[in-house]
Length: 332
Image (cartoon, rainbow, N blue to C red; front, side, top):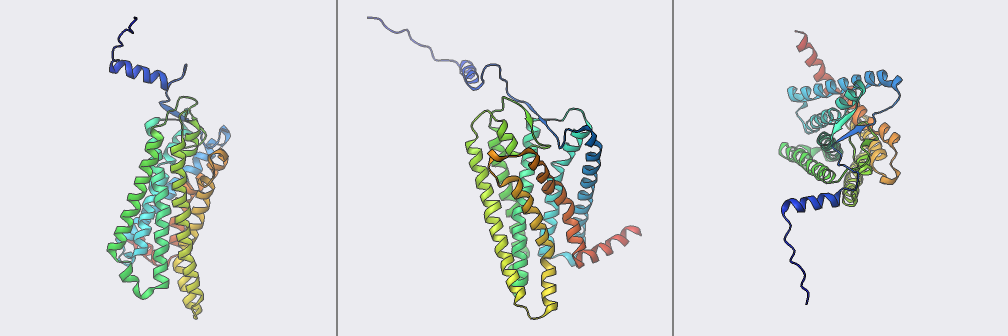
């Protein structure tokens, strides 16, 4: 009677070799860096794009730093609304700084490449700042709701402790969301083309490059879209629905004007930000359009951080007064 020869247990090295052979197809190697396609492949537009992006980046940095300086140094701006505005300015700086420096470097240099780790880092800070802004805009809408609909209870409801808790929760929840999405992206295998059809690392074009299943990533993206683009947006609309109803019930025209002026700046920012984010993210991955995504990405990652300080400064008397007091102090 024949007996089968005994099979020795494979060593750890042999197991790793077998696993590597199973994971990689013939003639395929793992991607260690990506090539960013850039905003436009037309070389005639390079100088124009450099000038525009550099100008917008400088304006965004200066504008948001000025907002932070005004809120922290002016006692008249030590209120919940301006505390949240200071957080928004910080998020704008993180958002635009995670995108524009690398985009400008790609326009200046011949090769526009980014390492795998650099891409994941850029993705983390971008998702963190974007999701934080969406959640913070909802918190700011609630702040305006309490200020207009319950003015007598505003100081007790929006206490400094509660504002600190809300701001910390926004940063923490969105950092966790970003870490999960970035971690899921980092575990994917990229063994085929390495050209990202964008001028920075973004979830949809990265998923299209993966040669491993992206089912879990897609589910997490849908859940994040539902929370930030669905629940958040609904709560913001609910807050402003109550605000508008309360303003319409006011008998004094001066009261209506004053109430609307306190939330008009925030309402403009909400409209601009949500419209651009919806166009970029609230759509199936199969319908992803690189050119459309590039244009909408400029709105929320470049234009919005640049316009936010202007909107809040030009339409707010308290900020303009604080700015007027700050500028003479620099001249002396």
